[in-house]
Length: 511
Image 1: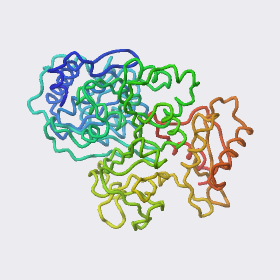
Image 2: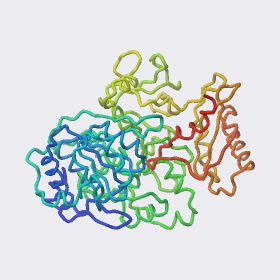
Image 3: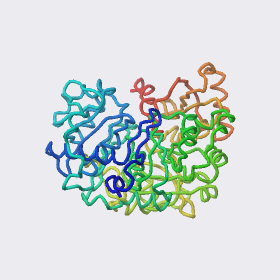
Image 4: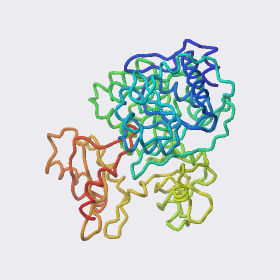
């Protein structure tokens, strides 16, 4: 299915509800508005395989613009609205966008990239105008509301969040086939989470991230309603589940943690009985956090492990997770291999780099070197997301950490995720990052940077309390030797931590 087919049957049904403003985009509007923009793309000379980019917060027309590109056979790049000028300019120029769309609330950054993006031929702005930009509303107003003659399926080309360097554009193959083709992700979603036209998908994360965007489109292909939060707030989220009788949702572990730290009276105030599937991914979830969530919400919490690259997909339901606590699942797409640095396979229970065989194909746009860097050393065509982990005897995968985050202290490998998982559930910790900092004797030592629940408690006493708390639960060498405090950590709204930004503050003096 696609918006035109659904609009023909239920034209007035909400396709999008904006949680904050209450604005509704019906399926008729979604179909007609995306058709208008698709006609504008064709009138501007864009053909299947060409590229557009857009930088928006969770705007009411975000999914309209996405559908316009998708049904025009275009590659489309959703750019994070939190990036700075140089980062946005790099992505828009690197992806080869011929059209760039933004909104008046982001005009400062949007206009600042003009000189650095000479390949852009058409610049459109929602909710206002700015130098070099045409009014989006005026540009599409005169276009037909019917479908373009050569409709075909496009593809997203999203960029990594840049937590460890320049973001990489993940380019998946597109056959530019008919819109009626279901695609692999939609088939997985249907198989695992049984969505239907009467369901409501609550999306609390930024739509420019792969999972929220792809899942929102998939639920709309089935005629469901997507409720979009402009920004995540834990109590507001619970209220929205109750108000809209949400049946499906997708979260990240930091959202779980924030909800669990609400007062119990607040948590129990809302009726969550409509939820049938609470899906989570994107970052490791501490075992105590997931245990508490299952105790609170019941056995409706489902987890998957995958990446924007689409080279593999693992899944675990609540029953299997309770029997294999800490796992991110077994593979449904791609054969998992755990390898050492030379590409030799390792036995169950031994940590190594996680590779996928026979998963989805991808490349990093315009960078064959980066593409080769994630392929296995022995040339078997296996690819990795850069994560470290192991499998158990039943084939369940357990993540240890990102390879790039590993700390080497006195020749010993330390994965900071272990300490982060422990400290994240401490009642006085709102957020935490653990990483290596320079040490003259050991090479690196373990450092924790903590966002406390209250900055009034930040100081030597809390530092000592957190170190002791960690040492009671982990081998001492894995625990931080010191703790610094910050009022907020640089975490992406999707849950990913910009650890590189924290590390860089400690390493320049050692260079």
